[in-house]
Each structure stands twice: as structure tokens, then as C-alpha cells.
Length: 569
Image (cartoon, rainbow, N blue to C red; front, top):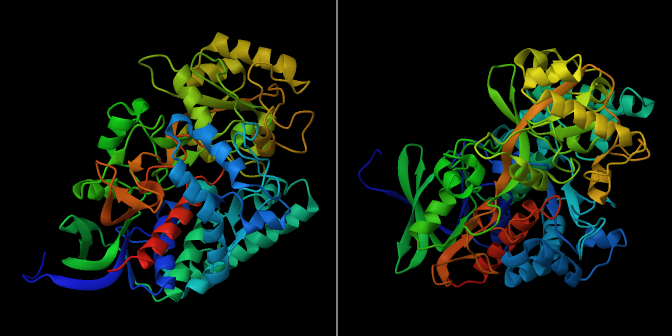
């Protein structure tokens, strides 16, 4: 580092990380009159949030009430108690259920943040005690990137595998329009207009300017921070915390080749995105990962557990006893046109009719329409000891061209690139497909025969695909009698290999209901807070519904910001 005398910077609050949790804490503290600094190690802001679906799970909001959905906190608490089991944390759950609706009201009335809530997006286990058919999951409203001004160049990019021609698609209705573009004149018109606008933006600005999903959430939060004149330091990793007399008083941050001491009078908020790319911690906490490398995360590569390590140096405790250390998702590894590898999460294709999943023995092992977190747990349970934990998603030609599969888009988009790279395997017969994928031939043929025998009637007596509200929501509403079931019979046949990835880590810094980091004795560490994926999840290692990472991230960032504003320096 250049220079012999260390430069210093003074603020009230230092926020480490620029995703939803960090921005939430920063904007809340800034709104309450505090002098805030955001430090981001990556050259772009937004973290995992910018790559996410932009959904937030928060029960009891004014958005739900506007739909006429009234529920008591007790109903959601019952659901979370059921989901979390022995890991249920009553104090933090109560804080979440009480402050979450307040956070939504604050951000939607005082900042640039806006949400839309579909009436019938069910919880992932809607049939469980306290579960709901809708009114808890909301999605960030699309955002015009022009409002970010020169900062638009600094926002993190969406995951390429979840874009069309580099264009982000809004969740819900927009995806439906694109899937029906060849069947509906209204959808065709919508898609043509959307593509034309995107092409014009790329010509003028070098990128699309309609931000959706997580990119919209990151953009709206950043706009709110910039409106409050909160500085955001990019490419500025935190090297260590400043701890004096047992209290966290700031941090040493590398910026422009210099090490700067940031003095934070009131405290530091850790929101660094968890540890999906920390190989050592994955080895310790992900049973399937072997030496830590047998795991594939679509999260930003900079999420290497910095927040957890910083907390540990200040005496913080890491909660590592959850039954699942991360939010699991099945992923496939694709080769992009530039030769780089991409990680594609399989969210909704598994639920579509005419699509099933098998292990190497050719046998089904789970309800394919269940949540990604549940599906991966079934993969792990079905895997044979010592073998790679992998499953294959397969379908016939009709289903592939109607719905797509993984990175493979539906008709009329071409398949050639994915066939050439081997991402998509094709066989004229099931036997040929089995040979090309390494699946047991007899097992696969027997499985498809068994499945087809009941599929014509829309039944799945083996695993009940389509029997749950969430299955049906992700299926094809226009297909009957079961929106998730159709026979697999029209060759050629196709398959994609899936392995295990995550959408964020659950194990993290132990905190109290005020988002304060706790020490080994369960006592708050003065001046140290954690939120987002750095904070141990309140979900107890389970995945109750869409947005269960971002909902608590926004809420506990808000809680941290409020608590800091009420804390004497």
C-alpha cells in the first residue's frame, strides 16, 4: 500500500455490501439523518440481489390488504414454526413479522422502491399449517434505468442464463407472454414491442434500460441511496474491522490502492452476501460438496464469506447447526457462446407437463413440481453412496419446443448451440438417449412406460406431481386435466444433466431481533450488525416461499438501520 500515514474517513454507519440487505440498512439509517457509507468489494453494486428474481416474502403487508387478504401474524408464525422445526427462533420471527410490513410501507412511501403482488402465488408448502395460497410473495416493479443517471454503468448484470437476447424478463405475466408468443396475437404483439424497445435501448445506451426482477430491486434501492447522497465505494474490500474495548468502531478498507481507516461512530452492518463461493466453508457445511468443489452457485463469485470471517474476528458466533446450510437449487452447467461456463437454475421447467426427472438408474425420485430446495434434498436422498449427486431432466420433442428446458428456449428459437456443446442431449429413442447420457437404459424405458400409463389421465400415483398448489402454479394452466402432467411419447427425446447449487447461504452470523451480531455467550457485540445472507436465516434451513431471502434481507436491514439511528454514538 502506498503512503506511510493512513488516511481516515468519518461516518456514523458503515455498511459492507450493496445488495438488498445492505442498501436497506443504509437507506433506513440515512433517512433517519445518519451519515452513511456503503463499501462494496466488487466493481459493480447489487450483489446477489441484482441476479435474483426480485421476489420478497413478507406476510401481512398493506399490498396484501389491498387485495382483501387479511391475516394475523399468528397464521404466518404458525407456518414458520412448522417450517423451521427445532431451529425456530421466536424472537427474530416475531421481529420479522412485526417490522416486515412496516419496512414495506416505509420503502414504498419514502423511497423509490415499488412492488407488485400477484393475488395467487402460493407458499411452497401452502397445505402445511399456517400456509397461504397467496398474499405473501411480492415482486419488485420494473424500473427505468435512466433514473440512475451515470450510475447505470455500475449496476450488477443479471444472470445471462435468465435473459433473452440479454434482456431481463419480468416474472409472471411477461414470461407467459413470451411462452405464448406463437399462439396468441396479443402475446406476439407484446413480445415484438418489448424486443423492439430493448433493441433500441442497446443501440442508444449499450444495454437494456428496463430493469426487472432483482435488477429492478437493486436499481430502486440504489436510486434511494443516491437520493440521500449516500456515497457508494466500489472495488473497496474490507480488510479488517476496528475493534476497541470490545466494540466495533469501523473498518480498514482498501480503496484506489490505499488502506483507509473508516471510523463508524454508531456501528458496522455486515451484508456481504454469505459464503456460496467459500470452498473451505462449503466443505465444512455442504455434505454433498466433497472437498468443497462439487457445488455450483450462480451467485456472484465475490461472495466468499467475508462477512462471516469479519464477524468471527470480533468474537461473533456462526450458526452452523441448521439442517440445510443453504437454499438449494438444481442447476445445469452450460457453455456460453464466448466459451465461458454458465450456471442455470431450474426454477419452473420441472413443473411443466411432459417433463420428468430421473437419477442415473433411470428411475424418478421426487415430485418434479416441488420447490427447488425440496427437489435437491430428494436428489441427495436418492443418490447412491460414493456416486456423483446428479439427476437428469428429460422430455420429448413436443414438450421441449413448447416450454423449453433449462437454457434451451422454446420454439421458434434454435437448439443447435446447446446440442453442439453437449448441454442438451438428444436421442431418437429413449434407449439412444439413455446411452448418450449414461442413464440405465432399462430403468429409463420402464419409468417412462409407468409414467405414461397414468399421464393421459393427468395422474401421478407415484409422486403426486400436480397435487400441490405450488406445483399447479408453476405448471401450464391451459393444459388439462393436470397442469403438470402429460405423457412422454413423441421422439426425439432430450435430457439435461442437473447438479446441486444454491440461491444463497442459510448458515451465518448469529443475531438477535435487532440484527445485532451475538458473541459466543449470546450477548450483542457493540457496534456490529448483520443482515441478508450474512445473517443466519430465520427460516431454520427450510424454504417456505418465493422471496424468503430478500424479504428478511429488506426487513432486517430496515431493523438494523432503525436501531442504529436510536443508538447513542
